[in-house]
Length: 277
Ligand SMILES: [Zn+2]
Image 1 (cartoon, rainbow, N blue to C red):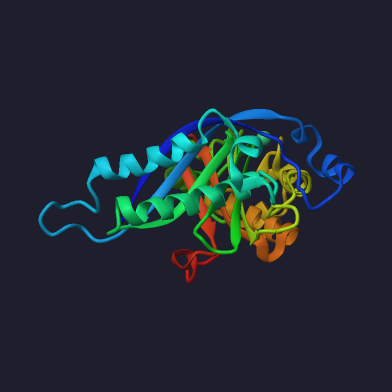
Image 2 (image 1 turned 45 degrees about the vertical axis):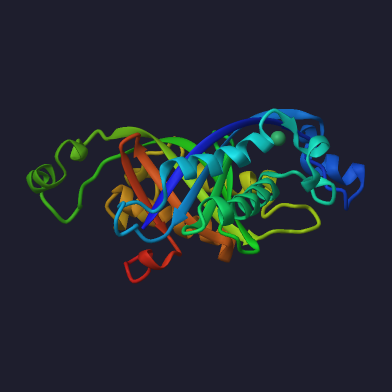
């Protein structure tokens, strides 16, 4: 069983690696080498066994104390100048979440010794976050949006059958969505730079994939959807294959929000495997 806690803190930082030159830092991190700030959102996942008598993994007050202890250390400070953790590494989302994870585990050992800190996920921006589960890799999570139209219909079926099967989604003139795609790359933390992926390069490669479907009528404009009904499940397969082509083994998970209420996801985690891509 897993439970989670979310907390917010505001902090300043400069993104620059102490292991490379100022010019190299500016080339990679741009304006982020200047001091600036974020409202960070930290989500922590805990795992453990239910207490046989009390029915919880841990006393809620103890979990709150744990999260608050770590939050207070980071809130309203300059990560580079006020804390000891970023003297020898860049203060990137990937390294900050790693430090937070280690601090949570340290504090948990005394405050909530019966449960495990399994994962920490840190959002630096609404469309960018990083996560760790204590391994040398990081999850690098980036969100993209695009608009596209589609019509769901199987060309082998009659118009009446398509109408019956796909309902309003079979409208011959199509309909559209503003899709939100959440891309997760899982890659080793590059110790020299403190990153798991280059944000600019990732965006460039991901946008090239997004451009294949953005402002298109999927079923009419893209050959794949002439042999695959333009469902969002099939769009997921199309995007998975395209992202896998761009990112190879680093591609770990993708989620598509077709509307704010409809989620489709696929990834390398064991519970996705065995299912047809
Ligand atoms: Zn920043």
